[in-house]
Image (cartoon, rainbow, N blue to C red; front, top):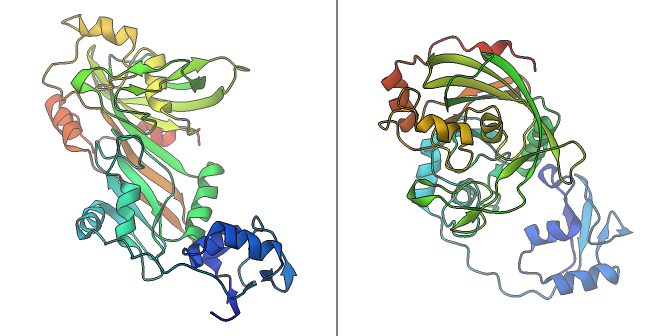
Length: 351
């Protein structure tokens, strides 16, 4: 091939040079790329660069004649995955889509995980090979709103909104017992557990941090100054209750730590129903008290829903999307007479 001068697109803004080459010329070996960059054959706007150089939209990259292997065959698009993703869409525009993630489906891959949303999104890649990008994550057993960008540029803009805490996330949970006070603020330091917790029989499920089939990490309450300790804050309020057995909580996390809501619920003595990991000693005692125990008819699945996501849209206006209850939570709401149209007091909680 002859010398080419290729222009960096807006979607490629901020991309490292080596990753830009990997995207544009995936058949080019890393060793050959290092050689042509080191010898000055690759230039950006006429200047010598390094493989770690960040590119800006509009710049021109000089690409010399290359020694490349024949392109690998494109992976076969899964129409089943594409249909499954489309069936999850709660909202969509030209820049992004909001999915209703079902219970039990992982967001990203890991050991022992072969089917996950990140992999399924490859089925929606365009002709140039660009595919939708995850903006945030949910645990495997958490249902509800999941934001996906349609380009790397939009993913970066949305990621910045999340980092600046301009995104408001509201979760619904059913918890064991009735918290006191009815409204509160949970402020704790969380860190990864010192050991690993064995999976608890058939009722346990994988999650975002699954390491293998039998063991998973658990977050622990830490102290300020502890290694890896991160501050976490959640506002909660009781929407309805069946005293003394259980309560319907609306929860607004201000920070976004791993397993934050699950660990916070356990920490205040009211673990989320169906949580195999953050079950709590108080929850264990409560389950052996017939007057306070959660009925056996409640499905042993995590009763946690990412109910609503509100954030400024990078193109202007406000994105405000709500997810319906997953089937197992709908069944529990029906059992206890909870009305999803009931006023949610968390709306008045601080931002």
